[in-house]
Image 1 (spheres, rainbow, N blue to C red):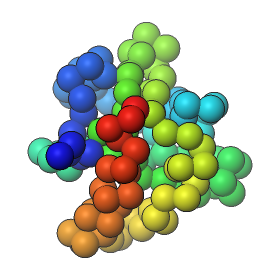
Image 2: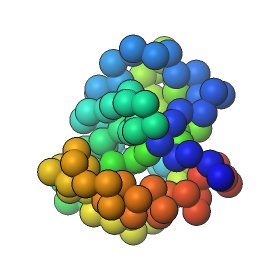
Image 3: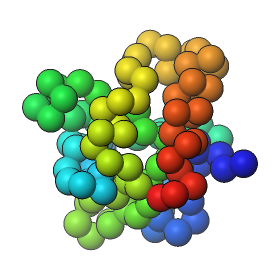
Length: 117
């Protein structure tokens, strides 16, 4: 089973690099910029500020959804479509820090897509 909470070795991720402000690209276009990120052990993710795309909401994308990071262009590519991201469980900035069930639900949703990316 794929752990969606860790970066794939092929992403080009350099540990310790601040990804805040990087543009995020879905398979079918831009979805926003990284608002924050975590490099936690088995708990890595990026939080994307979607701006006007989905009414200024934030989405949490597990690190395993990231397919490539272009450090020169400060751009993160994810193996998901805009609709897949828009249909994801809503980001809850309080729950994501403390609620293991929230992580299971979110991880389960993205796990279905991560092996195809």
